Length: 320
Image 1 (cartoon, rainbow, N blue to C red):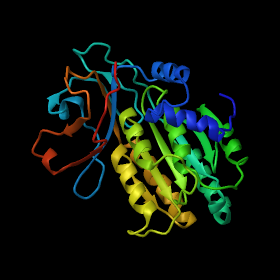
Image 2 (cartoon, rainbow, N blue to C red; image 1 turned 135 degrees about the vertical axis):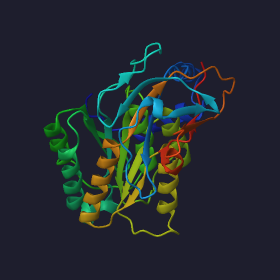
Image 3 (cartoon, rainbow, N blue to C red; image 1 turned 180 degrees about the vertical axis):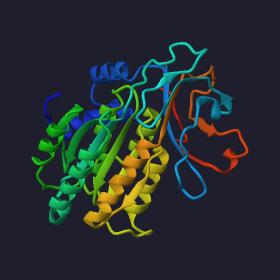
């Protein structure tokens, strides 16, 4: 994947494809319609389980959990804990298809002019995270201000990602949701478990699309979004509400980290979350619902009643 800088024109084309704004030409409509025309074959579901003290619950087995879609029990095809290699569940067809060890991590770094005064500290916090990620995880680095730049393609080579990080420069307005949209689109093409980590100061003053549309797209694609914001924590601030909704919708989490040490701590907590999460895949049982399908993960035991599961709420299948 070569480096690429998106212009506003190419961004508008992507937004049109995503939101159904087929106003450019009949040819664009035909091409975009073909791109999005696919059926749900395999659902990849990531979730974490914690006790009432917030401590991760480890060593669960496929028979310990139950996955329901609109209340319909699903047959788990593959199961993995943390970065262990997934294993197929006996009695399922194609039980290991689409499941891979490790996580594809897409880092989205805010390089707008709003980050100028803390830019060097932010780079150091991100570099520290890159060095400590599990060896099975692949990483990609994107940066954004008004435009998105693919700084490093998805790779297991940490050195190349670190080198790309040091080549980022600050400047221009902040188009966070534009950049996030394009990152989600790229991540959705990658099979297996993946996640997006956004490092930003929060305010967006240049996007042509809103957070709800981006969040819904990531939720439907099964991509948890984590956000580390350097903005001041304020329950009344727009970034606080938006980032909270965006991460909850996709099964991720938001962290408020104004200082370098808090940023490092936030990255460590995300890494711990990835290391202690579970990934299951399943082929959806026949369901006439073509709209939003609610997903529930249950632990049907007396102990399970005291546990808390965090996962995306569901998804909207694409048309076949």
